[in-house]
View (tube, rainbow, N blue to C red):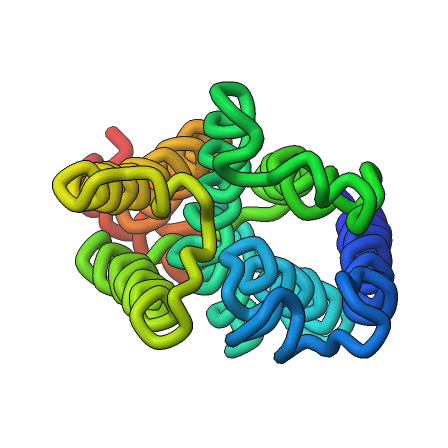
Length: 263
């Protein structure tokens, strides 16, 4: 895909997400004096995984714009070295942005379909505009899938990927359990209604889902870019077997003539 299309896409998505984030910060309030740290009590908006991801997604597409302007976009067929910006972008997308984004979409709308009061009470409709709700919980999916199609991301080792995403998941789990213990606030109503053993099963299922979504992102990346990568490997093998420089061709001809003299 041409560089101009990629730059336009990343810039547009970044502006949409950043402006939505600013709107969320300035206008989404329960009380007029609410701030990021006081919204709905202890921890403020930082209690919510959606808000964490809002920040993460904004940073990611900002990084994409920076890389488009002054970094590199080495594809599987390219022979250049990835710059540091592209390495950060690729690793960030693979280990955090994609699996966490899919997690937010699937868990939010999955629980919403069963009983919206367990994840997004109807009272929030008066606080959060419908369009902002979709930016936070719906457009994540198409934004990431289009990005995967337009831009090749080199995945790290699975060990590194699993360690990163599980560390983030456990960090957030520790945070919301602390909020529940310290302030007696269950961030998500579903955790309030579950029995202790049900909470354990639910949390373990969510951790397994994180792992699955990491593997899904890896599979999608391989499906889209795998054939191009394989063709490049074949070309590399051909270059090793069949030299193409003029000097190499000269020596090949000399050896051929020596082995097969003209009669």
